[in-house]
Amino acid sequence: MHSSIIITSLCAALAVAKPLQHMGKHIKKDYVTDLDIVIETVFVTVTAGSPPAVETPQAEATTVVVMNTVYAQAETPVATSSPKAAAVFAAVSPVEAAEPAPTTTIAPVVVPTTAAPVVVSTPEPVVAPVPVTSAAPAASGYEGTILERHNAHRANHSANALVYNATLAGYAKNTAQKCVFAHDMTQGGGGYGQNIVENGRLPWTGVNIASAAAFGITEQWYNGEEPLYASSYTKDNPATSADVLHFTQVVWKATTDVGCYTAQCAQGTVDAGAPTAFTVCNYWPQGNFGGQYGNNVAQGSGAATQHATIEWSA
Image 1: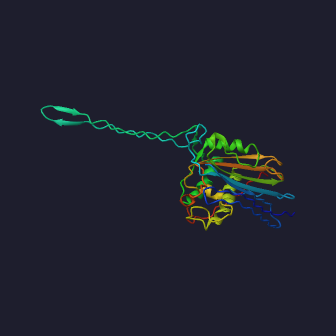
Image 2: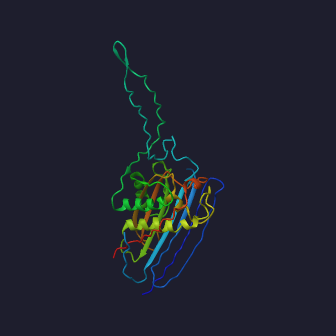
Image 3: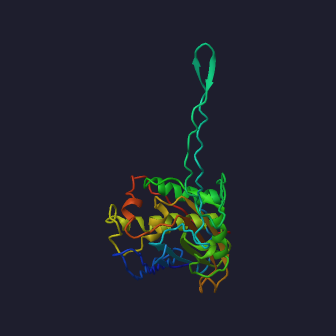
């Protein structure tokens, strides 16, 4: 039987913080015989304010649909004292002063002398209107896959490892289960970054959701965009209008937490042409701030390229 591959990319990006403002759109199509169909659509938007591959049995007219997009706010500080301020994922504890050791004065008698008390200033409390919890990564499974994929790419760009944040994952679940291919960054007061991606297939046989998420992170957000950023390293803003803002959010140095969810959505919801695995990843603090790319997106160290494959059910 014969099938075709069609790759489509559609992006809209707006990175705020002057002078970086751009919107772009380009569509690419390639046709290849005897291959599955992959359609990738990328939506990149930033607004002001803040396991091994499994072969799939051949089927007649197999179609794979791929879309992805990124969204990040800019300029506005993430944490704020407003009742609707963004969730805070790290708390600052006051510094405790060590109790001074008693000293003695030798004279006719031994007299214990108490040192004067040490005054320790207490740091300003961090405003946390929405409680946020970080869960330890599972040794395997979905959470472990999310962390392994993100942190492998971050290590290649001198960025610290992310921790898995259950609150961000809960927000991602709420968004993904709506099965609408659009950003939703208002939960908990907002202020976090977000990448979304969908992978569809006809005929639909089911999917390993962890493998779908891994494919989105590694093949679409990282491998698909990192090469396009080559001329932008060390610059305050990307020197390209290409689709790169998924990649920059994945490796953004100031980001510390991630939480994701992958929902299986019926045909006609996320995608009109096929059922899909719809993945949403939320990031704290958000990345893609105009003027801050040079300090947050470091050039890769040359680690071997990683790959991922979606595991479709038989």
